Length: 420
Image (cartoon, rainbow, N blue to C red; front, side, top):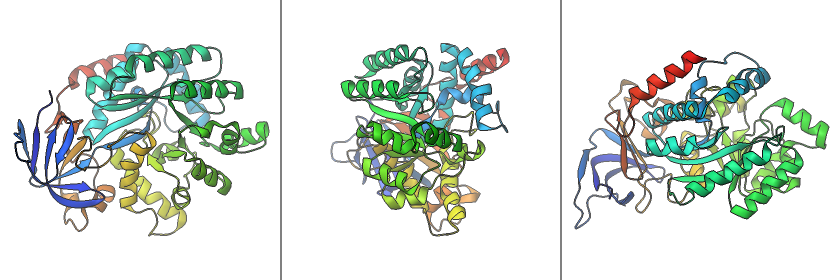
């Protein structure tokens, strides 16, 4: 039985507005935003004076095990980064390595206010195990490529789905990696599995100029048009990156209800470009926010990602009034939950799941507080996160993890790195 928790005398980001609140949490959900209802007895009371409660952030695109690759393959071209540096290390990575790398990433995400993540990974088993250990809400997908071993990878994905499908904290997607690692017959096979299981699709799309050029050479159209013609988008799809899009591509994404996980820092670091976020939002595309892996970012900090997501469209479009902080906050919360088909996640409302990050506002960079919501994107950096609840369970309190031995994780990650 989960504790009854009361967060008193606080402010909360609810429905896009900052409101005075006293949040009562029962059975993992928000029972009240205005104090303890009659008959409610708090097992734990948190003093929220000088604090701000925000919905737990939703990191809609990660490779969390890549925490092991942090600062390892920097300042190189995308193709060298992926094929010469990262993939060989992934091939040599053990199941245990992936577990400790994912736990490290979970610590980082929780400490910076993320409560839900969507992960794509190359080794079955460890993303779900680590997320449950950390107490996080996770949408996981075993990466699928159509080279030799494609059916084995699908079998592993199905095995994980069978193992975890009754756990409300772990859901699954099918993850055909990209059009350049999955040929047409393999994508059709993945679509068949999606139809049989009801699993959603999670893929990389239109990330680099080379991907676009190769697709035109092979299929005579853009990657978005190719997948639309193939019928992939007839299933609910989350597409990561979408950096290089034509007007037709954007129209297709909007028409087909494809959600786009925007990864601004990773795209910049790998020199892939800047996604047309303003144009996608204007067309009605559900744009959410992701960090990508720590091998290409190099953090999993959604506050940093929100800052870049606010600033880049202003510079690219030379308009200071495009892609507001409030719209980016929605990208990092509600839009992410929508993309992942998570119900009652992404806002602080009565009856919704109690995924709450409590921020200490007593920081010099947050004074004066002219607009607290804007400050989350333009001033905050994630170090303000003090306490985190996920599904009503306190997973971090006063900066200390409650379910994970941090030092054990750091020691194991250091050991793995020494063996490289």
